[in-house]
Amino acid sequence: MVADYKEEVAVNDREFISTPALILRSLSADPGRPAVITPDGAEITAGDFAAASYRLAHELIARGVTRGDTVTLLTGNTAEALSARYAAGLAGARVVNLYEGMSTPVLAEIVASVDTTVLLVDAERFAGAAELLPLIDVPTVLRLGPGPAAVGEDVIAAAAHRPAEPPAVRIGPDDDLGIRHTGGTTGIPKGILSRHGTYRGVFDVPFGRGGSTDEPPRFLAATSLAHLAGIFSDLTLHHGGTVVLQRTFDPGEVLAAVERERITALWVLPPLLYQLLDHPAIGRTDLSSLRQIWYGGCAASPTRIREALKVFGPVLVGVYGMSEAQLISLLSPEEHDRIAQGGQVPVGRPFPGVEVEIRAEDGTALPAGEQGAVHIRSAGLMAGYWKRPDLTAEVLRDGWLHTGDVGHLDADGYLYLSDRVKDLIIVVGGHVYPSEVEDLLLTHPAIARCAVFGVRDAQEAEHVHVAVVPAPGQQPELADIQAFVTARKGRIYAPEALHLVAEIPLTSVGKPDKKRLRAAVAE
Image 1 (spheres, rainbow, N blue to C red):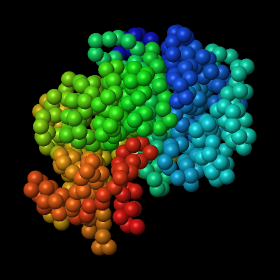
Image 2: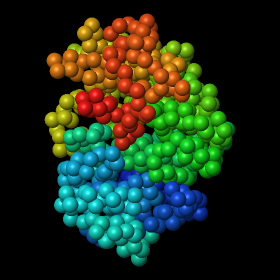
Image 3: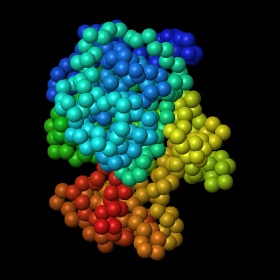
Image 4: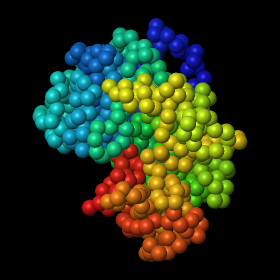
């Protein structure tokens, strides 16, 4: 995708070019092109965006931000959030995002744990800042634009007189890039430390180009920039494209934006893809501009993916990755024909340079076709969990990462995932992988969406529960669902409880929130 990338960069500190510098260099080279479309429809040119980012970097440096500091972002899907991330990286600071959906006390503990030097807040999170600030002790709090004085000084206004050029800060491949936190609604999530050199490998991903045209990509960031949408935005801006921002994921607004903005690339988690398929506007929306719909992050239903292929055409790109390892495998549009009727969705073949090994409980490698724990080795592995060498040692051993996923490789080298080890439900008579039951239930005519999860009783025995969004006009009943599952998979897989819901709750990253479902059962 970037033919001249390796010619530009030698892998040593002296000639290394960080990704923020690389992205802004690309923007500066074509200043007139549209770089960002804000949620309110305003267009920001590449030149203006790059200049603002450079000025902000100089302002942060003038305020004492340097290599090894932590700049924490309390931001939404805004141009200011993107610019602040690049500016902090240019200054040499590691960047931490405070995710929406986490409780304020948890955010406060994250702020303290990462040694925050500067907290930057944009207009989307001013209300959250009012709750957070009394709970934290941070040397500097600044606003990214106009807003309440209680949230600090407007650092963008203060930066207006700074130079619109790259700062002279030397960044090496072994310098910290950022700390990304695992999902969760209780407790302090693990902080995953990444380095600048490791992230550069992401820029080899074939993103944004597809079909018969070489037009620059137009990426719709409808999910949080703090997660994978931020990475796709980096790729889009670097490769001459435009990032169109939306504040939150709303299926109707996403479909409207695809048509209005002629979107070429989109990232969704499978539950969000299903929302698009189920939206009444899908049949009357012009989807012809789409060249790539990237999906991943949790198990995908073969039934719904086959439906998506009929609706969107051969534009689906399956991807398997994790914050601890970045991108692991990819399933191209052409490879989706492997999803035969009733077949499982593979997560693709490993990226070049990524080794995948399936291991038994005793650590021995398993042959093709046998299921076990997924281990990987690559140059994209995390540096470790922030301030948690104990947890790091549990998953990183001899250069291999224990992903926590269960799966198998087939004879052609395609990787299939069964589930997360921690999601396994141990029932009397065997083990139940929720994704297997979910895949089956989604073929039931009365079920639109579902989530299968385990619930422990007072004796610590686990039971299979299912939350179901009924199909329009349908009212599924437990006895029917039990008979349906028992006939096709066996008695131990049949749910013992059925919960009818208007929508499956999702975590801050868009995955089914099974912790919340379990809590609702407990209440």
